[in-house]
Amino acid sequence: MIKTAFRLFSFCLVLQALSACAVTPEPAPEPNVHGGILWVLNSAEFAANSLQTYRDATDDLVAKVNDKSWSALPEQTNAAHLPPAIIFDVDETVVSNVEFQLTLVPPFKDEDLNAWNDANKARAIPGVADFAKAARALGVELFFVTNRPCIADDTTGDPCPQLAVTTQDIVEAGIPVTKDRVMLSYQQPGWNKEKKNRRDVIARDYRVIMLMGDDLGDFIPCSRRRAVAPCTTGATAASREAATLKYQDYWGDGWYFLPNPMHGSWTTIK
Image 1 (cartoon, rainbow, N blue to C red):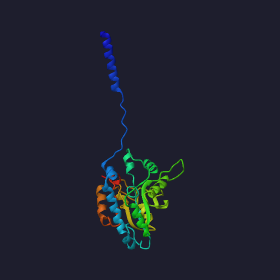
Image 2 (cartoon, rainbow, N blue to C red; image 1 turned 90 degrees about the horizontal axis):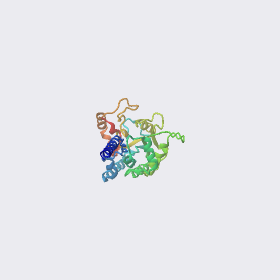
Image 3 (cartoon, rainbow, N blue to C red; image 1 turned 135 degrees about the horizontal axis):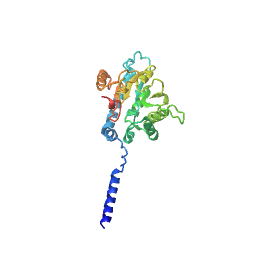
Image 4 (tube, rainbow, N blue to C red; image 1 turned 120 degrees about the vertical axis):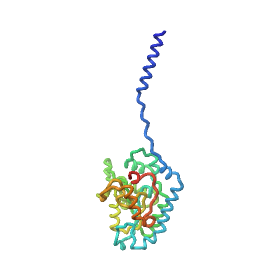
């Protein structure tokens, strides 16, 4: 009897030891859903802010079109003879990808965003479609400059499948547009993540009367932490603040900022 009890006790000890050594599987990572995402998704304040921004821009349209000496690009000169144009960013300016942010498990990958955009109908930023319609009624050309990158699809041979997806997103937001007015990063040589390069291309043939965006880099060059040509040094919190104040007269007067507490160049700045 004593031997039997001892064997049972020993067996239990072995089981306990084995269970202690068992490897507990790591839980699957969860999306990083923070307050900024929830604010964009759920708050009436987000919609109100976006509507207010686009209404302010609409109110300024006639004056900016008629003032041939005006340009929203500080470095653009001698453009009075050029037709007017507006440059939009895309994500969080024309369309919201807040639902993608809800499902995002870091690290962010451009391929994941493109796949999500391809599979889901775009959510329009409040006010953008009416503003675009008003601008076109005045003869203003619309361009869409986004840092969604071209990533070639080796299976189809398409050098930039993201162009079709992005163009369709803009159309779904209520703005008819053709691919030749949509400019992605790496779509052409020299079109890197610094948007100044693409703004300069547009400025050759158009007087840029307004900039619409959600990131400092949509307005001011060299705003990213990592320097990208033609920038030679990366931005810091201090340099971004100084640049914002340097061009303070443009905010709300040619430059119109949409709220984005979810992502952007600000998240990496120190």
